[in-house]
Image 1 (cartoon, each protein chain N blue to C red):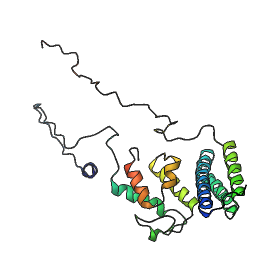
Image 2: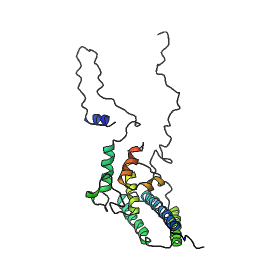
Image 3: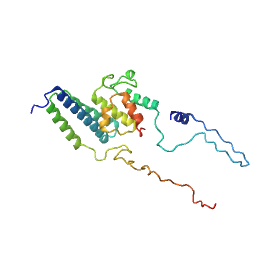
Image 4: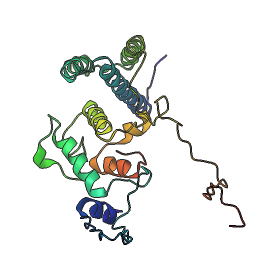
Length: 118
Length: 123
């Protein structure tokens, strides 16, 4: 298995890996915020997380990078918070579909019980 | 939209003095109080101001270089991970939840302002 031999395939694979790394960093950062609610703790943990990502910044070999990304995602899955903070109106939040838009054609007539012969 | 926001900010309600004989007070609606949150969108200047404030307070950024059409990686010299951090800071500022794929595409102040301005739930 010679991997990506052409330059375009190599670049495409690197780009896909970079996107995976970015998404993994984003999720790990949000998870860190879920665990470390107080800001001063969050800043320290976020710096540590950034250090871990920066330490592996200069790896060039595609397979090693893939393995590292897989290991990172496994660590992220292991440390996921059971009750993460989700913005209320987003799926999983507390206000999601709380007040759905009423179906069209329904109308409330405010006549307060008035009868026609008034 | 901007007019209404400006009006709501600067309105003065005229004081009604009722006559003692109980003449009917004429209610004058100087403004309309909307309790619905569906019409309360941010104005573009507010979005731009808040986005620029968030970007300027990022520690790796020089505040003087930040303009509304600056690119995070090309103009400000930031990393892709810094980009992720800025997008997260914008999510926290505007109480949004941006999906991962969309958040990956936000690369510059322009895109951020467009996305936030067009988002229906931007706080």
